[in-house]
Amino acid sequence: MTAPRFLQIHTLHSYTAALLNRDDTGQAKRLQYGDASRTRISSQCLKRHWRMAKTDPHALQNVAGYVDSFRSRELVSEKVIAPLRGAYPDDVVKTLEPAFQKLVYGDKADKGKKSRQTLLLGAPELTWLAARAREIAATSADAKAAEKALADWVKDKNFKAMAENAALPGGLVAALFGRMVTSDPKANIEAPVYVAHAFTVHAAETEGDYFTAVDDLKRDDDDSGADTIQQTELTCGLFYGYVVVDMPGLIRNCGGDPELAARVVHHLVHLIAEVSPGAKLGSTAPFGRADLMLIEAGARQPRSLATAFRRAIPHDAGKAVAALASEVRSFDEAYATGEARAHLSLRGGLEGIEKMPLGALAQWAARYVGEAPRD
Image 1: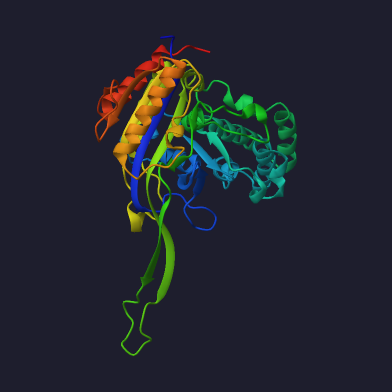
Image 2: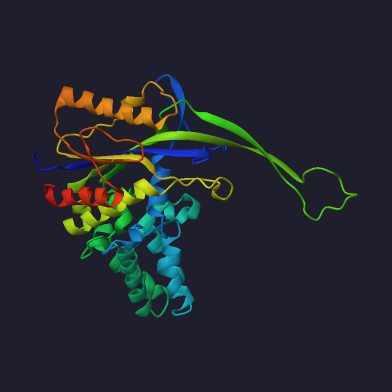
């Protein structure tokens, strides 16, 4: 096989009586696919839960070489300017803040925080910005001196300057999932991890949940009945998920370090299998692990196996595994692209594809990172 470029990760996850991802009306997100409406989980929702799984043993924060990042409209206010307050003259700090806001958020910065882009910056970038702000503040006796120092400094400073001498300038999250900066396109980071919206392999299964809240201190002579009456939506589903890792792109975003990229893949496989998305945690406990995870390593353009479920099938894990196996065989017969494969499965398995537990599967996937070509 030609040196593999892509890892493709296919999953089946089961959830019962949950509201995993809501739309703007508070209902479960949906997708019309083939002959039926399906329940959907957005890629943004999935990625957020993977990157925010801070207490998990395989959290991204536990990767050796992890570099932190922060996503906010208040990065300059909280990480750059706030440490200056009280340490330097107020008029100097007030002069620095709008200049640094504009440096990071562009022309919309002076229109208020609500107009700013919610931006992701890495700890190295924020450290660099804070150091420059502190240097200017320390050498400026008043606002006029700060204005002059800023004029001499800001004109040649941009995200490229912030990224110098940092292997992961945007942090590990940006290295995986990318970053778009509208104020400076040169600061964009291309995502090497592509995440599809997950959807149920069967027609959407929904239930309106009528519930009440009762006042525990209500007296007998008070009005009878519940204090609050509400209704929400609950769903059940077996979801197909699909993730692609462009290994050369990940290595490049990890500062050219294939060992760091391999550690990231090892953790990412665990997170995809074990970390659940979900709103209403307290009332639905929507925790589940993958019924099946199939990983493929290959050099050809990736292809989803979502077409296995173009026609909705019964809500049955065994039938879903069989449908995936059939789709893999069909692609192999038509294209013969020769991917290497391994999988885990709670129910049976995929004939002809090595079956292993999650830890071994994560190691199997991480091994291919070292074999990937360098762009």
